[in-house]
Image (cartoon, rainbow over all chains, first blue to last red; front, side, top):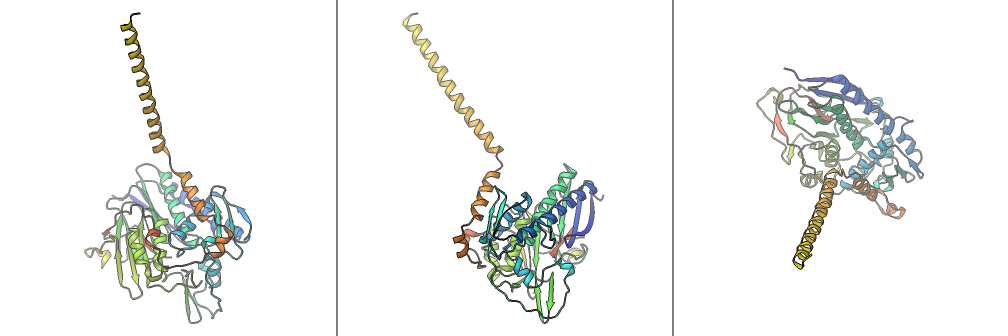
Amino acid sequence: MTTVATATWRALGTGIRLVVHRGELEPAREAVERILDEVDRAYSRFRPDSELSRLNARTGDTVAISELLADAIGVALDAAERTDGAVDPTVGWAMRAIGYDVDFEQISSTGAPIEVRLEPIPGWPTVQLSRVRREVRLQPGVELDLGSTGKALAVDRAAAAAHAAIGYGSGVLVSFGGDIATAGAAPDGGWRILVAEDSETPTDAPGESIAIVDGAVATSSTTVRRWQRGETVLHHLVDPRTGGPVASPWRTATVVAATCVEANLAATAAIVLRGGGIGWLERSGLPARLVDGSGGIVRLNGWPEPDLRGPAAA
Amino acid sequence: MSPADRDRAVERLRAITIGTAIAGVAAAGGFGAIAAVSYRGAATADAVTAAVTTTTDTAVTAAQPTTTEPAATAAPTATSAPTVTSTTGSAHASSGGS
């Protein structure tokens, strides 16, 4: 008997996927869409009327912000501190400098060479936040981009909201561009997740699949959301030391954690941290799968070897 | 009232006093236990975040971003990680870059 229903659509420049187990799809979708709308208005970098855009235009001032934006900035700063600045929200200017200044779907995949003056990003301590007073002050020259942890926070909230909308005994899986959170009861055998380079990979494609009964999964990769200017290939994961796209031993990192925020910051840190962050990941205890530049795979902290018996592992 | 009656009355009053004191301590402990399990930790989380993210201008000027691997003490505070198993068959979702 089929106990899951699925909806897919696009929002915030990425693919949205909602899977409901033993519950009604429509109220869950409405809950997810409400979160997407709130997030878009609060911290989209590409909407000039978003709270974040208005905040970025008022550096030097102390600005009152909404609870959602305060939470999102707080989560981003916490991630920056825990990763020693590897996952840092003050990359906004650097992102624009390398050409990521509009929604990614509007960026041409190729183009003429551009001249970029790279410099280290300002760093997260230049952001002064009071979550109690819901006020924030950015130093002049600082521009926030909450794209990494912000998306993960949105997924966590969307999964919780969707589950609350459909009630006891049900379960949901929500994916925003391959960052996944679950809430409630899982189907028999758990939530099956195909681990891929690209989140647009069809769910029945060959590859390595894992199952979780709760928690979240996130993947960071330099192979997707990349573009070329002249002979130079650029991507969206910025190295705070240089302000340019990071050169990492890993092209893709996938991590399982209790929340999508946890999984996302660990996956991004693995790409950005000098030396590949192996020691940092091992200390975290989070199951992780790392793919190096030639396709070699490293599995850490209980990440299972692939099951080669079924068609998905062909 | 005889001296013996008076002594019995004093003993009884002392027992009642001790019993009341024990009941008071137990009640306070009970309320404390209820408060402990009811407290969700929001205020603590706020305080920690505020302390971490509120910086002085001097500290800001001195701070520089680094991406060296953090020391053991700076490792992520791993909440209990979910169990991951290998599986096959069509998936519910794909995790990948986007």
